Image (cartoon, rainbow, N blue to C red; front, side):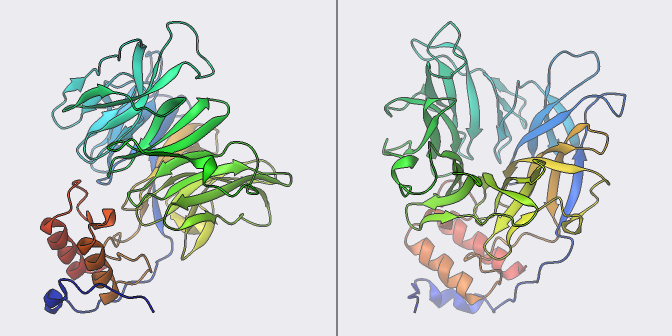
Length: 407
């Protein structure tokens, strides 16, 4: 029997049990994000990040403009050009990060974080969390470094400025969650060597050291980490297994994702995970056609190219790459039209996302309240319900509001 902390249960009179709604079909609405090119068959768009309030970022093409200008997108405003090269992520306050630049969508302020001593060129950012901490990498040579060997991790925020971390042989940080834990890689771009590090304490763990020795071959890849410390990644296998997908956390250990089954290669490559434990990534058909998958404990692993799951997706469109998923379940990435054009996409879940389903069992009931109270009393990261980086009574009140609103 699971023992539940009953702290604050005296406030239970605020609530009644609410049954969660069953999933509707289709489950997502498709939104296409196209280029600015006048010719509908010209150009391309690739989306890379999305915030919890539905702001996405990426790159596109424009007639008579060299390169790939950065864009921000929202459901209400559509796409807008922004002064960021290769934007990779956007946080819930509207900070967008890319190569050498942090841009505030709200104030339109542009920040150019400085180099560290002994570094060259501009930092290249991979992510920014809701506290405004941006992470990335910067070069330690003025020459060529195509293998990514001569680099160090780079961290910046408006309060503390630029800094790095002391992790042996670390080259980069590419993801950071809202409790200040980041993912990075060692060695070089080819062999990777992922690690996870607490930026406050400096404590780090090499991912290869926590995976079973008989699980796959070579270096693993770790692509994302949520606020619960759950990490998703992949590791090569031995034929006929091309790549294992996994989720790992220090509290629950290793969970190997299932392969998609008949008609597909034994290849699963997760790219992102949200706080509900929903994972997105890429799979491959037996004809080596890359598709996008979504995985949850309740539904297993599913190919999102199956038309029944998505409303409004154009005929012949192929979801090719899932870049990210936010905590409301919105998925962002890019794919190919029937004519072969690359466009960005957003998949918006139908119906409201049930953030009050705290224990993720698919049903909103009194156990969600008890589990939230348990986490709140224990100062667990998941109890930061409003995502402001502080666990306080406002999180409790926000949870109460969400719980009473139902799903």
